Image (cartoon, rainbow, N blue to C red; front, side, top):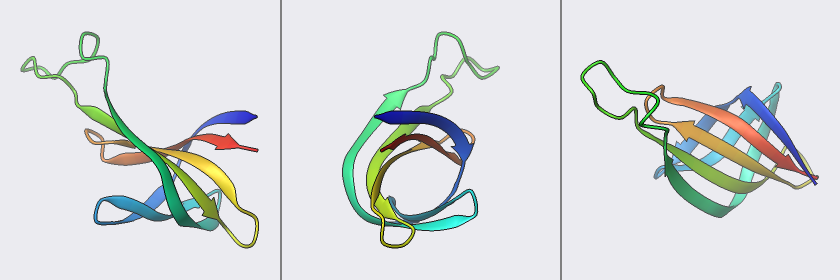
Length: 91
């Protein structure tokens, strides 16, 4: 079962990959990356004033843990805003 969020998170990366993140005041350590993919934003809806598309979003499905319990989390990086969100959590 998945739960959908849209919570901002602070993410630390190494070689472009997330290695840890803070969500709701807890530090999570990424144990492994399960999936990684890139999507293009709705370029036909959102454009810069000069007509350029607004960019890509990177998704990282990771196995992470704040302590002993391991969970699966989906992190989303928006290159244009240089921001990270926690988009999903698997129970």
